[in-house]
Image (cartoon, rainbow, N blue to C red; front, top):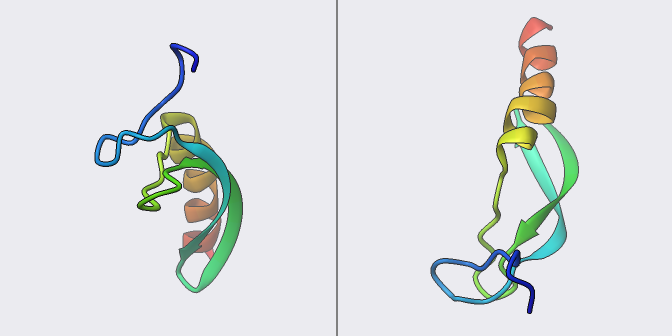
Amino acid sequence: MSENTVKCVKCGVALVLTKTVFQYMGRSFTHDVPTCPKCGAALIDRELAKGKMAEVERQLEDK
């Protein structure tokens, strides 16, 4: 296992990229995010939160 492998704090297992559905104001979009295969916890990195997620929020709130 690589030193850069991110593990779930709760389960201690390596996260795997999983297609995840995000919903906001009745709309949804999918994105691959690192997710714990045991408990399902997802890691939302800063780039995703301040990038795509923020963009979708702005677009929906402007409507």
